[in-house]
Image (cartoon, rainbow, N blue to C red; front, side, top):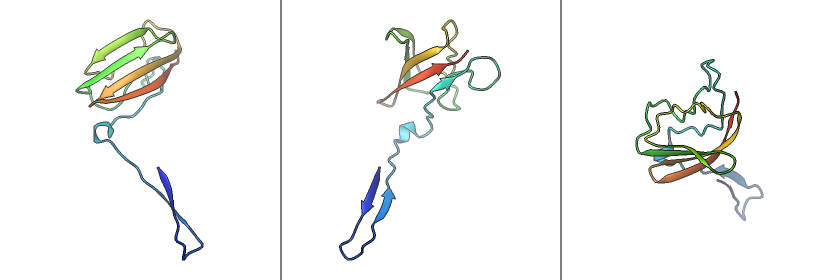
Length: 107
């Protein structure tokens, strides 16, 4: 959030930024692209470096809104195996917070 602070005694205003961080999401990186081609880069849908995101729930939808993958305690390992390149949607729930994003898969 940005703000502007002005004083009637001064013709210039100061700008500032306030960042609010949810501790439950501090280590989560919101991925929007994977390329599962076994080159060792972006081959899996990963949100952090943990093997398991404890207390999480991940649901992935195709472009028609059908659930194609769903799991609790996500293991940072979805590779879109069996699914074509394209745009998907995911909902990641962590500590009661729901994050909704798109995901592009390049194969």
